[in-house]
Length: 403
Ligand code: ADP
Ligand code: ASP
Ligand code: MG
Image (cartoon, rainbow, N blue to C red):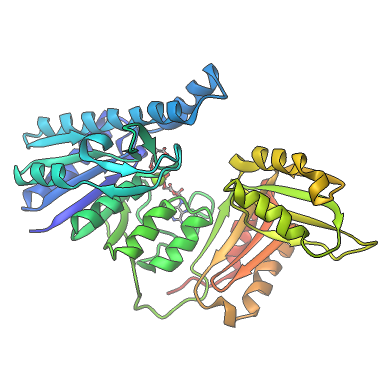
């Protein structure tokens, strides 16, 4: 007998038929004598629809009220799923984030889990109940509802699995595992049987939204046995773990991230302390900066450009514009027409040929590179959004993904 945490994403519970299908998957595991905790996301496009609804009424809404609104999506799916399980004749109870005690900080819209009170879940499991938990939501110390950021139900599931010392955490979704690229963009992408936590973390952080990046971080930290699999087909998925046995392939995956804005600050003085001033200003406002590029100085002037997420672009522009004099800049622009395309794989640092192959792939299809950034386990380039999918396909084509 094992304790299993299963998470079902929005598309897996999008309509009544799918809710019944998921209920069947859950009760199959329960019937085998296992304890089952289930985490669910909002149905289908519910979260997007709620965001649109809020923006229709007040685009400048407070983050607190937004979280209050968005958390309702998950409350709908937990109750419906519990009703489906009742219909199949099994004991079940649904719990919201606050009912179970998912304690987070107060960073509305991107809250971090601080503590999970496990007493209620354990009590329900002791009563032989199947426990259905609302993903994506928590409660802060003021008793207000928070959400964990888009895709955050994965993180709820892994955190609960860690807190309960579950034997397994299964993430059920609309693909049957983690692929070498998003199969919607690259139809002949290959399914990976296994992937390391580190590689998965890079992929997730660089735009592979099949797993929320925080969920992978937590899985690595607490050594959670994590598997991504299909809600619809009963086939083996992808196991995410510390080490993998296979003969290593150099590049594990290609990703694309559209959530990028490029800020370019032109004509700053070419003297010590300028970069320090700009980036300490941004860090004070908790703005995450990604790729940074500085031009070679000429006439005692230089340009500094960098990327931030689209969501922080407007705030970044405000901050820079208010401090133009202090920075000594002539002009600042913001462009949201770029995407970041990346390749991920451990051990790239010792293979200079990898970067050349990636750039050759882009040259082959005539895609211009606007920024480049490299690290031990990834190479990212900034390309025009309109070219991003073409770039992903061309790069994927260039590498050999046989395990
Ligand atoms: P859920 O609602 O179940 O959480 P998501 O839409 O968040 O599902 O995540 C699943 C989607 O992630 C897939 O439909 C796929 O298009 C996308 N995806 C992006 N990159 C990858 C990848 N490398 N492997 C598999 N799926 C990926
Ligand atoms: N419903 C939330 C979202 O759409 C959380 C999730 O799906 O994981 O982002
Ligand atoms: Mg998701």
